[in-house]
Length: 78
Length: 351
Image (tube, rainbow over all chains, first blue to last red; front, side):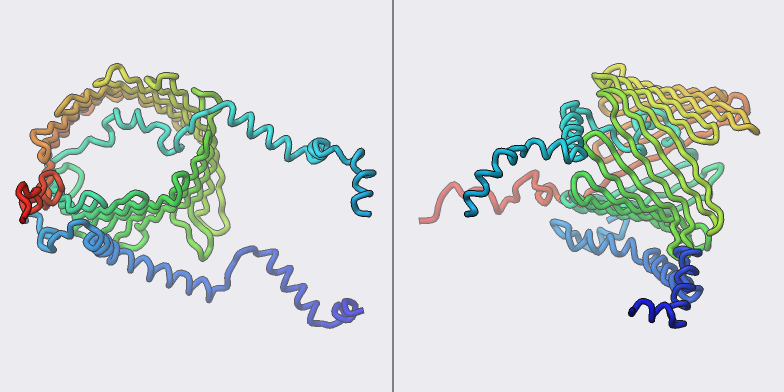
């Protein structure tokens, strides 16, 4: 009885049409989401571009045994 | 009461073995996997490393021209941490560059980064989750847009097979990018066969699927290896590698392009001599190029490389020289080779 009532309401028709629309274009986020994703990817790329080598040096410097001196780390001659 | 019923039920119930045939897929799977284990097939290695031995003997990846110097400094041994400064100049094709690199590695993590004077970065990150599972990331990031490359990869090595999934420049927004999957399976103790699928989505509404087939034969004593790779567009690559002695190995490589518009072939022969303090590679190919590469270690921390190539048909030559200096910032005490003087055992105990 409940299902009959639901199918009679216009809301389910709308839901069904949305569902079909969703099926016809799979996995396509809206333009807004797309823009947000592109912005996030750009930000991540910038962070990795400038932060990767400092990150390796930080990890290496703190985990090394024995800990090296900073001047030896950067200068090619020391 | 409950005890009386089992007595009556038990006679027909004994088929605990009969449920086996009734659930045949499981028993079949168990028998199949037991049979597979009994074959004791070796792991075939990754599809990326299919031609590793031949590539290591051929000197295409070693050849350079101009002058180069590489100063590397080991700052820690365990975990491994080192920085490198490298200089390249005088090349006919490439502008002079300076690049700084840093590397950190422990048992299951590897990180490497190298940045040149123009600010373009190449980064590598490998993480081993278990001995069988490795995730690899590679990135080339440059200041000019549209030239960055990101590659994400996962390797799974089973007992007698290897699976690999790879994505190049995947875009989460519209799912464009290049996606690859490969499966390499040992068929006998010597033969491994594989298939590789490539899905290219350059734009959201254009997809291109291609397949490549791989085959590898390893001799029983592993002294020679033959491989073949057939790509969809009529490209065949075949390699042969043989170890002649402890110090000498040879390799041959044949690449054939038989696409409708283009027919081409290239054959290469190479030999490698691995001596106590030096390694020497020589190569000859069917376009008339002769090349040689020598790496001489004068001291454990100093090595010298010379590379040369003569193109007889074009009458051109390329020469490269380089030095590699490795300096350790650690004193022998720090490396644990010599115990520091203060830690010497005291011969006379204090009263």
